[in-house]
Length: 361
Image 1 (spheres, rainbow, N blue to C red):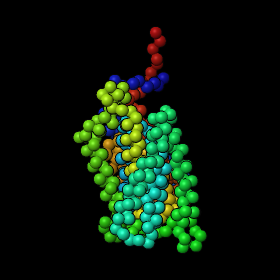
Image 2: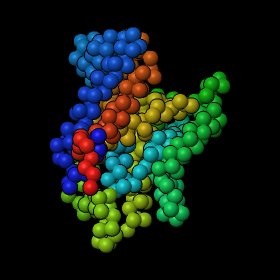
Image 3: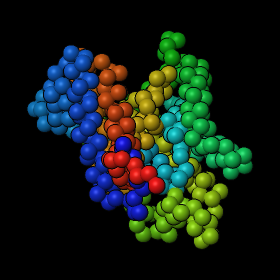
Image 4: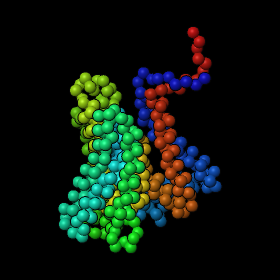
């Protein structure tokens, strides 16, 4: 028989090698799925992982876009990693991303068509506040009513999507849009534009914010007492309480920061690549960032590389759809396999497999 036996201490080998093995298994399982769909699996894998970086026709455009796609994923995943390390599970970053984008866009459109230089910074502050306040709902309910933050934050995503649909078709709709849903084009107006740092690349301030978040999180976890308290709260909750760490304050902090970062990622996207608020503005970055956080082992540097890898699957997946007519749901399933294998293999960090007959006393 096969059984799991708990390790005395977590395996360092499995902790470090799990992401790489999960990527390899995802390629194998994904290749089988693509073959079942009538595609050449090796060609699809090549188009997804190789062509965006090295194909002479696509690389010049795809390489800068890698940073643009990775920016919101890294920004959201850094915020999520704080809570995950502390044992606080924010699964609703997608909703906080939406609300942050709506608050930021509403602030900018309230001053339309002014081009005052303080409008865009004000949009960032509004997005931070919006994402944070949306995350405070599951935080306060957990503290006051002992609700499950996983369920509450997840259900609030659907509420945020309903608010997004209302905004795009009603109170944020472009009055000059001839009745079509969607806000004014925020990226084409100087007052609300998220400017490119390097012309022609699409790289904007959201990419810089993501890199700053990585550095700040690294300093927090490696050099600051708060980072130690966050890790202690997740690994030894009783010891954390005895050392003076307040569970309620930790919930507020972790959910608040993750909501704020998700919100600001939303406004950077709304004023940059997406350019406006539409019904389908959210593309799942909040959920994909969960994969990024775990693939990066909740470490800031790991999250940076994991975000780039997931961005590569986005860009390569779009190329595969365009060049090979691979269905979009197949690409989404391929991305989901990564989390499946990652979580499955993560068990081996704390348990070892034992094969053989169970001894009977």
